[in-house]
Structure formats: C-alpha cells, structure tokens
Length: 484
Image (cartoon, rainbow, N blue to C red; front, side, top):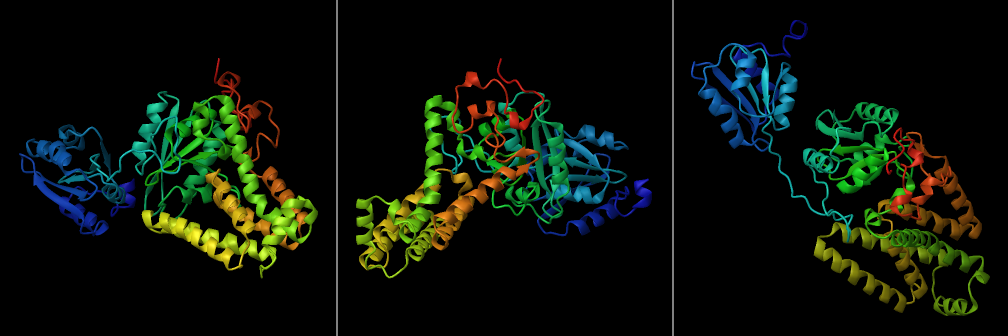
C-alpha cells in the first residue's frame, strides 16, 4: 500500500536507483558510500557518516561476513550473515537517511526491498565525572554526560527493576534529537506520563540543542518568572525523584536531566542531605532559606530604612551609617542600584572570561573597584558590604538564582519608590502567585500550600528515614508506601 502510494519514498530493489535517491537525501561530503559484492557477485552499498560510525566494527561485523557469504534472495538471508547485535530493517528512504545521520550505517543491495540498519554508532563522548554545578562531599560522584544512552545506563544501573520504563521520542525537524521519558510503572501516575508525552510530541521546532529548550514547552505557564521543571545533573538524584513518582526526561546532547512535576521546595534540598544525619540536613536547609531571604531583602530594607523609616535601625548603627553616607552624592536607592549592577557585570564577566583570567578579574576587579569607589566618596562602605553579602547569599540556592536575582532588583525598586509598604505588597503578590501556580496538577508551593502534614517531614525540616514511610502526598502516587 505504501509503495504504491509513494513509489519515490521507498526502496525499489534496483540498487543503482536506490543508491542515487539516497545520495540526493545525503549530499554531504562526510557521508561515505562503500560498494562491495558477496561471493555470488551480488552488489551491495553501505552508507555511513564518517565521524559517527565505528568503521572497525562495521568492517568486522558487516563487510567481512557478507563478502565471504553467498547470500540468497530475501532480507532475512542477508540479516543472518551480519554479526552485529543491533540490526533492523526499514523501507522508507527518508528514515534510512535519518539513521545514517544518527551514526547507524545502512546496507542496500540489488533485489533488496528493504534497507538494513546496523547499530555501529560511535559518537564522541566525554568521560563520566562529577558535575561542576552539584558538588557533594558525601554521596555518589557520577554525573550525566551528553549521550542519552550512557545516561540511561546510569539510571538503569541504579533502578534494576522491570517497572522502569524508558520511552523514546524524537524531537526537532532537523536535529532529530532523542528524548527518553523515564518513569516507574505503577509508581508514577499514568495521567502525568501521558500528559508529558503529549507535550513532547506536540513540539514542532527545528532543533533541540539542550534540555532547557524543552522546559519552555513543558511548563503550563511558559512566560512565568518561576521555573516549573526540575533539573539535575546527578543520576542518584534523578533516580530518587523517579522513585517518588515523578517523570524524568533525558535529552541526547545535554547533561541536564528534567523531572516533573516540580515543587519549589526541591531546590532547598540537596542530594547530600540524604547522606548526612537528619539534624545536619535540617540545619543546612534552614541556613539556605535564611541566606536567600537575607540576600533578597537586605538591600531593599537598607534603602527603605534610609529613605522612610530611620527608626528601624539601632541608634549606634544609624550613627555609623550616617557618617558613611554624609558626603555621598547619590541617593540611597540609586547608590544601591548602581553597586548591584556593578556586581552583576562582574559576575557575568567572570563567567564569560577564560577560567583563570575570570577568577582573577572577579576578585581583583571587585577589590579595586570597591576600594576606589569608597575612597573617592562615590559609594558608601555599608552599600558595598550589603551587596557583597547579598550576592553570596543568592548562591546558597543556586538552582533558582536566575529568578531570585530578578526578585532582588524588584524589591530594591519597590523599596526605593514606595518604601516598606512597597516591599510588603510585592512580597504578598509573589506569595499569591506561588500559591496559585501548579504544573501537571501539582501545586508549586506544596507541601506548604496546600498544607500536607506528612510531606512536611522532608520539606525544610528533614526527619530521619524511618519517618518517611510513604511517598510525597502532593504527587498522589498510586503506590504510596515505600518503606515497610
């Protein structure tokens, strides 16, 4: 039926014609062809991508067996001679061309009505190492890399169960990026799995260079300031989230895995929290929360106190600040905003510069600029101290630093224009927004809003392992019990 309707899109069995049509689909010079014959004189042609194919394996498992065989009519007779473990057939020329571009050689021969795809792909890979964005003193050191098969093996190594499902989809008209959807059957809700699949399949874009592209399509509110998709580079964290009843996504070409549904409290937790005593993990989580609150509100509070509510400051501190800002030509809000912008510029420059030059630039630049600005009377010493502490505090929760840095600017502007009332109103607006946001039916602010008593045992405070007998109630897993 397909061959009759689309004769130009399928294999005809005439090698010369099929070879010419494949070459029109693959005109690039790095797509090679190798012509050979079997012992009976039947002509064969192999298409393969030079940089993505293991040519040694191809020669040992395909060329040598076929050249020393007397193949008979039929695809199955040819398949039995090939020694590769991964062999499959395909009739459509466009799909065969996609396989070649993915690194899998394609075999065509005279009289063959199908092309044979051989799995001898050899993509360039880096070694598995500890991810630079998630360093842990205790716990596993392995991190995801840019190859989806290697990443899936790291997951399968930790979850040795037949319930672990890995469904493969292809996204991107030109990139043909492989996206692997991982979940534990019976633990993750079927409606969430299907919703994730539907959203991934609905993506119509040219290329997917990284998993961050998918987050825009997986979010119910793609223009939201707050992220709605969890991210991790560590297989142990990824597997732990799957075991709680989440869906995970591995994207070929990206070391960052995605997890859904996402709750804001996840970013205040660390993988190391589960390898240290519960009291230590609880202390560190409260410390992260405290550092983030201080980082966001301290510049705004300082400006608001100077402009509107001087009585908020202790008398001795007020006298010290008054002496420091006596000859400053800028208003408190403009001074703080300027120092904050300089900090952001230094941070951006240190990231974009070469590694060792960027480190020297950030340290020397901050010291020289700060000391010179204070000595010249351009900014005050308290402003430098407050912005420095605020900049350090944001990195206590690095996974949401993009969002919190914007919120810090908004709080500073509200404090400079309206004062304390502006900061309170903006805080109320943000809290209302967080409480009303959900993704895949799970509230972003859970387990605080709505309040889920059992989930509070692993929110900011962490109880010991014996107290965590059931999975998070916010996820509504069909398999609730995880510890007997």
